[in-house]
Image (cartoon, rainbow, N blue to C red; front, side, top):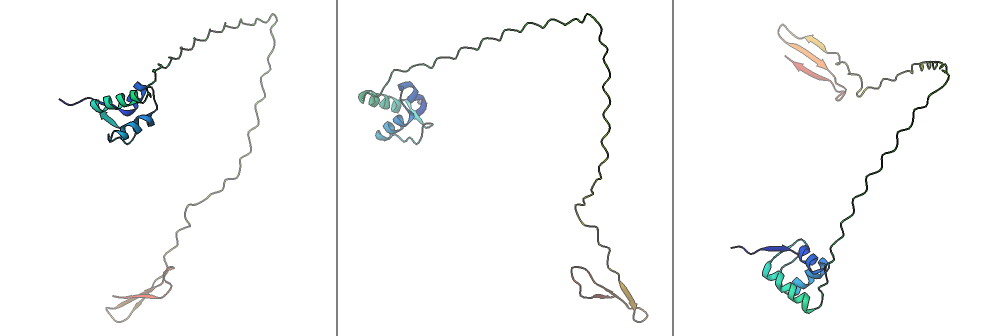
Length: 146
């Protein structure tokens, strides 16, 4: 049967001391504890409890008082309706004038597409065609014989 394990912070709460105190006591007893969230088995926890008692570190645990529930706010009395003895004429509010249309600026995310460069085709003989062109990225003359 596996032994029950307890977290260091739970043992500290049980003894009424700070987590760091339990970590130091555990390291003094050569119990491998790295932090407050480490687990130790029940026999090791008993050794830590006895050492804390012998050093006089155990304090009486004071349970945290439970917060009292906030009282429900009292409902506000409904305001009494105001009754006008004489009818009052209400003028309709003038409609606001529409704002003038603002000029809209068109912003393109990329420049206009560049038209393909003109190509020059020459016939060199009855079956040979020479095609020449340039591109913006490579301005030198390119040619294809086909």
